[in-house]
Length: 355
Image 1 (cartoon, rainbow, N blue to C red):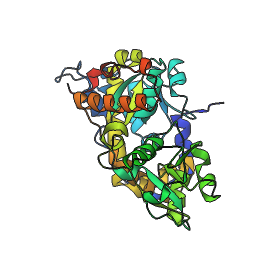
Image 2: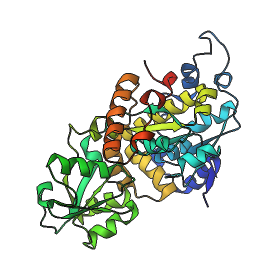
Image 3: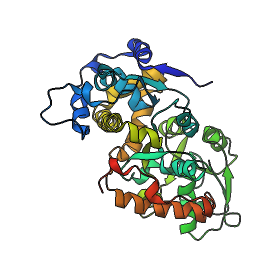
């Protein structure tokens, strides 16, 4: 059963985890004025408050995430939405279920990487992207081996077993690295498809020689405590780094059309909250630890890796060109059937980007 927690309830749960510095930071540069700035319909001379800029929506349902926990605790959901008539609900258990939840109106915004979004769309999901991040840096994904492994470089993995989750982005990182070496899977190396949740156990028990993964949560813990080490990252010239590994916000086509001001306010708040988290990592990680119980040092390690993409890219032509390259790669590798690929101009809600 998927658990939904109203933002107010999450705030109550956070109280016992507060540190004195958590309330000291100033809100990001979005707050109530962001809604007015985001709205193309509100006249510049209007004396109305931000409440007049938001469309009517009883409850805005947002996927649980680190930035959502921080925005809730800092009062930014209340300031941006709830003071203007829109209750915010943080929805748990959305990973891998976003398309179904959005279709049932049980979720309004999801944040995932381009790869799963393209899979959803190729399967016929009625979704549209309203925000796309800047390119990540190579440290966003890693090839990882146990600390006592004799393997020192990616070249040493020839003839070895390497694991990742086929439904996750690091699988693409792995294949690009192997193909750049001219290696053929099944001949020069063996691919093992395992869920991300099982990769740590598979690696430390020596069931596989290496894993390809995002250095998050339990993977980050291995790297921090020294039980595993990184030997390679995606190439700076790879398809993955040059558009394939971006993150994005998507919603239903109907929601994007019907609620443009709420959508723009959400995007602005997400961007500014994530920047505040990078600049106030101690305070932000303490907040997240109080909600999710993820240790603060793990969050800070993760944000250092993922935070390189915590800025929005609004250049629609560039995004479409890079998305086409990514989709072509997925078709070539049979992740998407050729007949089910989606025209890139239909993947993004153009009103939220620069054209």
